[in-house]
Image 1: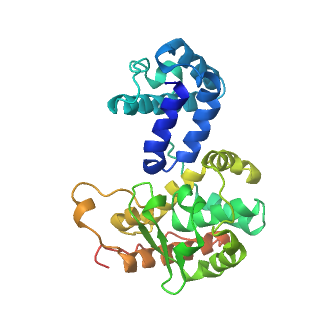
Image 2 (image 1 turned 90 degrees about the horizontal axis):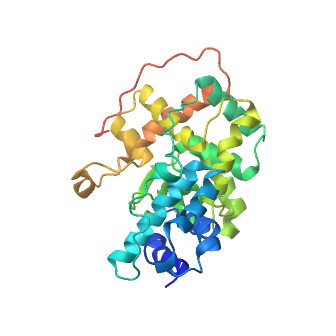
Length: 306
C-alpha cells in the first residue's frame, strides 16, 4: 500500500462525495504530496518524509501547509478506521508544527469602496468571467463555489428563482434565492451567452485559481486589500444595517441552521428574501451612482413571517 493509494482512496471514497472542494484538494495533494512521496510504501513513510513536503510548501504559504496537514491527517484516519491502510505518523502533529492557521477576516467594504467596485464592473476593469462573478457575489451574498459550479438549469426565470442544488451547497441542503428584477437582464444575457456550456459563467475555473484572483482584485481599483469572501461579509453586514431580519440574512447566505431547526424548519421564506434583495439592489444602485445624497435609510424590519 503506497502513500498515493491511501490518499487516493480517501479522495475517491470520501472527499468526492462529501467535500465541495474535492477538485482543489485533489490538485493540492497531487502537487505537494503524491508527486514527492506518493510511490513510497505507506508503512515506510516516516514523519520526516511528510515534513519535507509540508516544509517546502510552507516556504510559500504557511496557511496552505497547515491546511494540507489537516487534510492528510483526516485522510489517514479515514483509511485507518476502515482498515484500508494503517499509519499514525501524523497523529501528534498540529497546524503550528508546519505552518499557521488562516486568519479570520473581518473586512467589510465601505459604501465608497462598494460604489467604486460597482462602477469598475461597469467599466470592464475585470475580465468578463470575474466581472460576472463579482457582480453576482455582491447581489446575492453567496459563496464563490455556488457560482463557480452554477448551471444554467438552476435559473428559473418564470418563477424568478435561483436554486442551488444540494450537491453544490456547502451544507448539503438546497438553497433558494429569489432573483431581483433589476439583475434579470444581466443574468439572462449570461444564460444566453453560455447556454452551450451548461454553466452560468461559461467555464469551470478551479477554486484555488478563483481565490487567488480574488486576493489581488483590489489592486485593479487601488483599494485596501479584500477578498471575494469579504464581499459576503459586506453583504451580511449591510443587510443587517438596513434592518433586514438577521434570520432572513442567514437564510440568504445559507448558513447552517442550529439544532433541531435543521430537521424541522423547511420554510423557504421566499417573500421575505425577495423583499430583502430588492431593498439591497436599490441600495446598490444608489452606491453605484455615487449619489452624494445617500443617507442611512430608516430600517424596514423584515420578519421570519413576512
